[in-house]
Image (cartoon, rainbow, N blue to C red):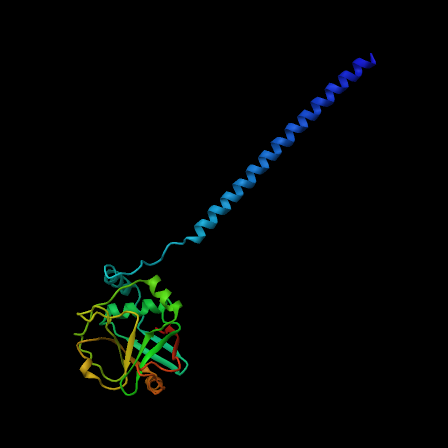
Length: 237
């Protein structure tokens, strides 16, 4: 009788252990699946965050004009401030040269001009800016795009002292298409430039700052021996 009792007790204990084992196994599989799903969801979320969509297209010669045609309708700002270590230069951009105005506003809002330089300065002639040999600025250009703007020289503007104009690209450019990342400000009347370069604004405050920049010591290529930085360009109105 005792022997039968021990046999029944052993069978009961084995059944209990088997149930507990199955319970633990099921719990382990469920937990592993949950963790895996969480990891996959987290990984997927990170992937989405690491590849944000561009707000604006990469600009080229093919799409730049169409882009600025639309951009200038939505962005009507005209007044900007160029901040330098020598003082501020306030500029009024002309509505008549809408593509060039829109281009300057766009680059300003993209932060392109920050830490660019006045790289060519000639006393009583011009100060030219918007370029640099800094790699960070070159990377900004790559992100914005590679394009030129057509000249727009028949709006009745002349290269009087204090106008802001856009230089032409020096590379394979028989039609003197404008280099969109750069500009120059005239320090005297320079009417021999009329018809070749697009005037798209004028200095309304701070022309004396331009005069002071033009007096710095330069090398033989008119590049200042001590860098003259544009710290930032701000939208005023």
